[in-house]
Image: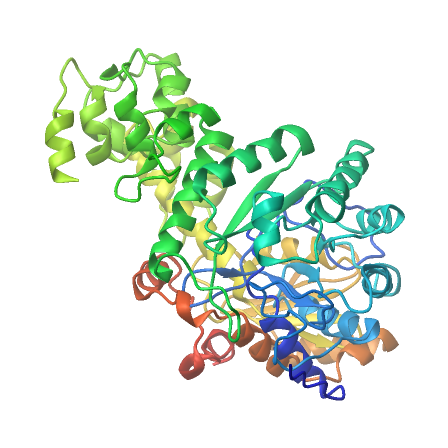
Amino acid sequence: MIIRLQPMGSLERKIEILGEASKFDVCASMASPRVVSGSNRIGNPDKAGICHAFTPDGRCISLFKVLMTNRCIYDCKYCMNRCSSAKEKAMLEPMELARAFMGLYIRNYVEGLFLSSGVWKSAYDTVQKMIDSLQIIRMKYHFKGYIHIKVLPGTEKNQIKQLMEIADRVSLNVELPNASRLSEVCSMKNYETDIIKCQKHIQQNIKEGLVPAGQTTQYIVGTAGESDHEIMENLHWEYKNLDLKRGYFSAFTPVKGSSIKPHGSFQQERRRENFLYRVDWLIRKYEYQIGDIFSIMDDEGMIPLHTDPKISLAFNEDIFPLDVNEATYSELLRVPGIGETSARRIINLRKVNKKITNYRDLQRSGAVVKRVKPFLIVNGKRQTRITEFLSKN
Amino acid sequence: MKKDVIDSLSRHKDVSITFLEKIKQIPKEIIENVGSDIARKAVSMSWEVNGDLHEHKAFLRLSISPHGILYSKLTKMKHYNEIPLLNFFKKRFPTFVIIFESTRGIFAADQNPSILTANFSLEEALKEWEAKLPIDPLLLDLNEDNYQDLWENFAQSQIIHRRKSSKQVISLSKKWKNTVPIDKSSSKSLDVFFNE
């Protein structure tokens, strides 16, 4: 085992190391409903969030996303920061982090801070360092903008509360959908005590009014042979029992020196990641039940990657074709090619006696006409049969 | 909201008074739910204005003076968005004086949230305000490091090379015309874009 412990170099180098070490953490949303007032402050959160740059794969860079340190006592096989990794190690001092972040925020390079860390010495010591940094940012610089904090596995209850008093959003990565899957790739973490127990403390604090943007979590896709069924079942449990705001997915990227080999090709795992996002969206925004999602999975509990899940779900329904001028909002939401906005517009126009009489009207509402055609009756006609549609897609 | 659509339209560089008047006559339900071709035209023009404003909120980089002034040149602004942009940054940085120079002159919001315009250059405006305001030691501290380089290093560190997708970059480039994908060969483009 070779670990290169280098003396702290320049701030730029540290940011490069610790930025790279955090790049697999997903933090797509930076919207917070918190409203700030008063003039003696710097910053405010934005309701919608703003992306300040994009990476070549289209991911948004909006937050200053770094680790406090990439030193870690754990040896999780999927992680590039595991203790046996030969990656160069670094650690930010609280003042360094605060200065780097505030300088970038004031210049409008970033929209807020996303702070995570490897577990250095112990969760307690690392989290204390994180709290010190955040207090400088909030107290010395009077920063009132967006902060997302990763709670480390095994963080103590009182420290979780301290973090949540500072942050807009907190998250704790479950990484894998159950204890047995986690034990396959990380023998040192206890699923119940290190992860679920901490998530329950977070939930309790949210109920008491802390972190307006709620808690989220993240799954790695394709590390331990887990199925989509296992992931969605666990995510659904988290939504129901831990008041989770949303789950993120990240296709496993093989790390140097790790014994884990991905189950499928990377492109296949990325597509899987994308489809998991789609079905999660259908549950959260389109009124689908978890049972609906399970019904389109194959015998191995995987979502078929050849057809969009909403189209697969539509084939299972017997409500189609629907008359666009008579369907309810919930029914319209189930039509492939119609989203929340277009469904709302169609219903609102109906209220002022403006009916949809042709595909041009539908297109104006924002619907994707090509996808909608087999499922809707417009002006008494249906233009494409489902079988024709299937043969073309 | 119809009010927001009309507000955005009035800042569009190509909007005519006749068109605005026509839009005002249309019922709000038709505008808000894009119920006719003219409503669609109005909504799409308002998106152009809002897109321009959003791009500036996202990609405009500010310079700091230790006297508590944030300033920048708006060389890429297509529509008349100077005042909403000023309001956005003033709300974000209420203790700072914000100064923008656009093709239409100087736009500034000082300690009191008022908007001023004058016919002098950004450098002259900066000099005037610096003479009036004391140096803030906290900002002097934040002025020392080279944040441009820090940002470039950070942005580079976020790239996951295996995930690179030319298809997605192309579609994003179309949507966000001002966004240049970051890679080794064009890493500075985003900031150079506004400073050229």
